[in-house]
Length: 141
Image (cartoon, rainbow, N blue to C red; front, side, top):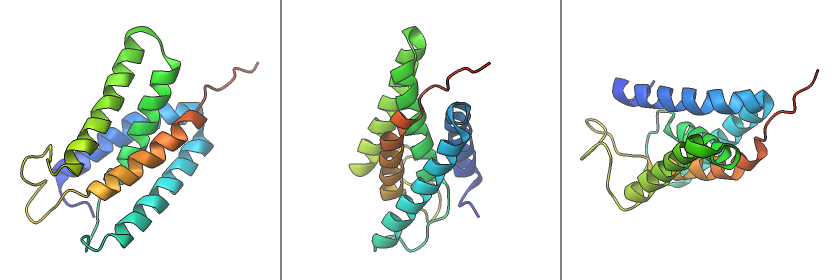
């Protein structure tokens, strides 16, 4: 169960945006990235004694957005490349702000909730490491 409808909507948009771009490159690699990100985020959350409950998909969303933005920034040209680079910088800036204790939700994402910064950083790091492996598919006839 997701902690709030607002967070679920944000995660869904991020998962769809990153997932569509990466799936068009390689469905198998997308599946591996999701598996790797789930594993890494799960381990990091488990090791963080401050986290008692984690429900959501924000770590996976961070992984897909980071991988997709990096891949697009490497492959595209012109304004699409600039847009992809801006998305990547926004993801990194959000992580930096969260690490500094600033939430883009304001004080908290919802009643009784705390931003899972470690999940976001773990997911984004996994995505950045995987991004280069999503090269364009060769066209075959």
